Structure formats: structure tokens, C-alpha cells
Amino acid sequence: MATKDDTRARAPRGTRNVTQAFFTALDGLAEAQQAGVATAALAAIRDALKARRLKAREAAAKAKAKAPAKMKAAAKAPRKAKVAAVAKRAPARKAAAKPAPAKRAIAKKAAKRKAPAKLATPPAPEAVKE
Image (cartoon, rainbow, N blue to C red; front, side, top):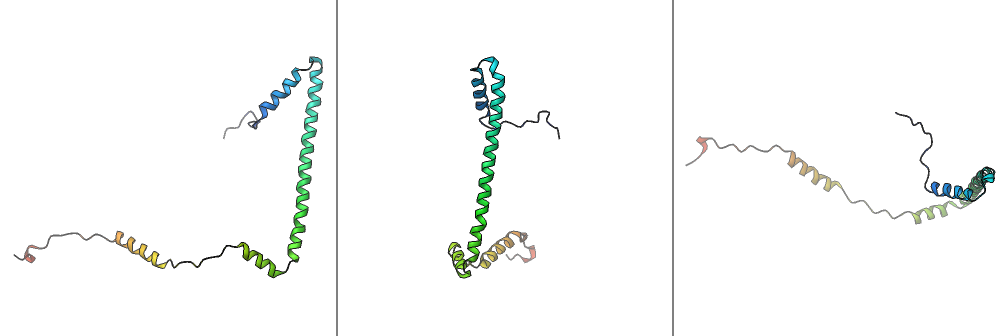
């Protein structure tokens, strides 16, 4: 398999707009300040992204911590209540129709199709009555 020289993947949707907005904002500044502002802006962006990831991780951990408490409460509930709750959620099962006659009919049809056709041979001349 051929390997790519460019290791970057295709940029996600919206990347071009953000990049253009960044450079448009930089163009509005004096050239002497652009380099310092760009590095400070990139550092601030990195910090904001790290803070978002940390906040998402904490929210996931908090949700995970709550889940076992719910399971413990469910385990303390009486067994009969669990069975009744499950029975309410489960759809009623209908008795299965007897599939045997349908299978037999299909088998008979298949046998008819596969049966060798009888060759129509003319009767012997001696057997023909005039």
C-alpha cells in the first residue's frame, strides 16, 4: 500500500472560516504587533480547548459516579417489583403459528419441480388398435 507524504488528514468542516477570520483579524493590526498577537492568540486558543476537554471529562466522570448509585438503589428493590417492571416493558408474545403445513407445501412444490419429466413416447405399433 502506498503511504502519503502529507501526514495531515483532511481538515474538518469550518476550518477555512476560522482560519480566514484569524488572519483577517491579524491584518487589522499593525505589522509590528502581528507576530506577538498571533502567538498569544494561539496560546489562548490552546488553553481554551484544554479547559473544554477538562470540563467534558469532569462531566463524564460525574455522570459515571451517579450511575452506580442508581444501580445500587435498583438492587435494593424487591425482586417481585423488578419482575413486574420487566413484564410491563416486554411486549406480549403471541403463540407461534404451526409452520409445519407451510413447510410441507413448499417441500411438495419443490419435489414436483424436481421430479423428472416423463418422456412422451409413441405407443408401439402393435398396441395401437384400429
